[in-house]
Image (cartoon, rainbow over the protein chains, first blue to last red):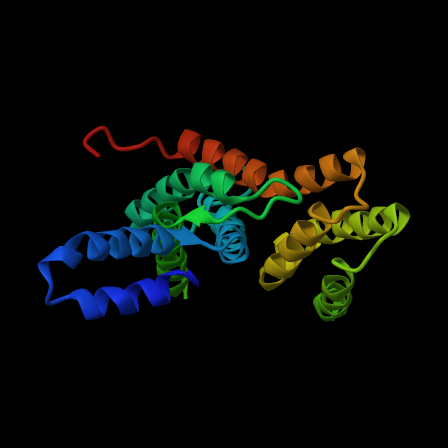
Amino acid sequence: MKLLKPLAGIALLCLPLAGCADLQAIVNTAKTVADAQIPANVALAAANGYDAIEILATPILVTCTPTPTHAVPAVCVSQKANIRTMSAAVLAGRPIRNAIEPSPGVADPVSKTAYDELQSIIATITSAVNAFNSAKG
Amino acid sequence: MESTAIALVLSVLDDLAPLVSSSSTIGNIIGLLEQYLPIVAQTATNLITPIKNIIAALSSNSAVTADQLAALQALDAQADAAFDAALAAYNAANPPDPAA
């Protein structure tokens, strides 16, 4: 990233010159690579966020599973599609979470694609959990 | 009341976890987490994230032993196992609609 600023400055000066097109391309490539990485500590926070929301999703499944001593509340019927969406999102997020969680002592950056995908999944689960809890009252 | 006390302890552990340099202290913290996690999962889910942060800090601590690392990973896996069991029971009781 430190290299990026001076490179970008040189490229800016070069903009009107056709001969500088290659340098501009190099800067663009460097920027793309830099943007495509998320620091390990930020990614780990997202992985922990996934774990936390997974734990909040679990009691909903338990609440909506009838047992001989437990009848399910009406909200479980009205929120059935929502529960399916939530469950599918939890399962979809797990391999991404596993890939993001670093091995002990390793703090490699994480791909932005994986990070964004996990954030999107967390948002889906959070929305489903909140919708269920709101409907439950 | 119980969750307030646990929150206080977790806050202290969160600060201590990166600084601990003794395997026996790490073992004591893991013991506490093993006690707290089931309580937190039932009654104080807002404390899950601090627990996860402590697990992550201890996992990357150079003083952690192989056995302790396995215990931390087992703690980490509890949430997955609980969800899988709940989903299996839910699916058995609520089979997916054929049209869905």
